[in-house]
Length: 425
Ligand code: COA
Image (cartoon, rainbow, N blue to C red; front, side, top):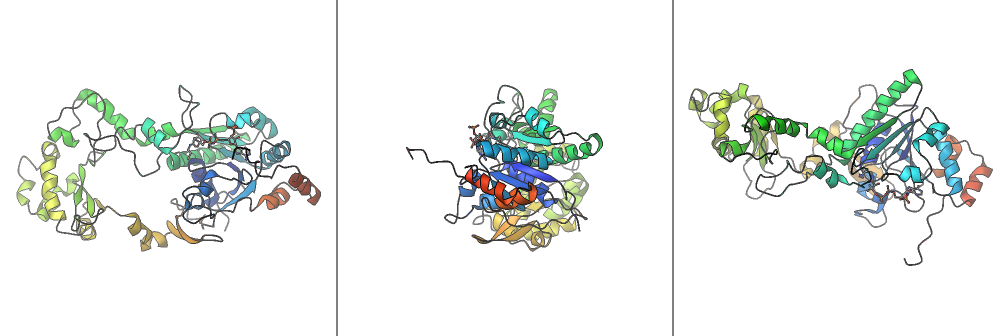
């Protein structure tokens, strides 16, 4: 069976997390992803957070499945020639270098266009045009500058970053959508174009509901926030809302049986209005179904702390899985707080390929997250990440059509040699 992006060739100049997330997705959809890495060094994450000495880290292997690796010094004249040929042969160039790096390398948008007018050039940067456009950015910087951090955590605590990599992986998803959209437009226009995704923009997009609340504040307090019921006045910016729900249905994280020793014995519980009567019956408060202080959603808003404390008395008598089962029978929306250990062992996630085991020649078997997007006619099997430069000769010959003589010449040029060590090192 062919895959959705069969025939699309990606020149993958990405590193660390944001860009590799994007090109890995494209590879899962069938694109031929050629990852260009610095000779001897490669993507810096190969050596970061290594759990096994001298073996590609999980950081790298989990973000670079289904790709081929070519090493090339793109500052070497022969390396530039090879890169020029790769630009001719590929459909999309994806990069997430620091601002200005591609230009300094000698491959501006104009230059790339002159080599291959059909090429789509897709970039992730920390910021879009503006005062910070020249700044280098990592995940937490994007979370802080995109609105996530100021709105995450407890009202009276420090701002918090979240474990979900919304700046890196989130922006990688945006870029992937931009690329396939540009590829689709190219089928009509025949032209390439530039696709840019800024991490700050990506995070702010995911914080849309908080910008909604910022504007609601002008018209009065945010009644679904706990602090409203606690009588604490609002300031001029959206406060941190702890575990309050971000939507119109109040929700909280509640303790379950075993919470004293298990840090994840909790459940997220949503008091959705249509199932309020079932909730009242379940927790033993049938009087709340008709009592004017509790019967209607608006009446409940100032009493959410009291209401959730009562519901928690019930959830504490059940494990999070028991509570999940009971509540779902009544269509009450809830979610157990699953640990990474529980997710890693989850049979249904393995059955769907969302959690996969992958074999690797130097590391052995490891666990990874497979393609979270399922296409019925384009199955994704997850294959291991490439070793550094594993496919250099294969790409020079098969993709670029170089002869034995030309390949030998490239090898002799220094374009595939690791950078020489500094005297001070
Ligand atoms: N051959 C020769 N040189 C190469 C090369 C190759 N194959 N690949 C990269 N380089 C060089 C670049 O030319 C650049 O050199 P220069 O600064 O002299 O022009 C150098 O490597 C460093 O590139 P840079 O991207 O700036 O890496 P960094 O480690 O200094 O910064 C980031 C890392 C992530 C902060 C930065 O790339 C960045 O801000 N990226 C955009 C935002 C982003 O994606 N951040 C999230 C990462 S998960």
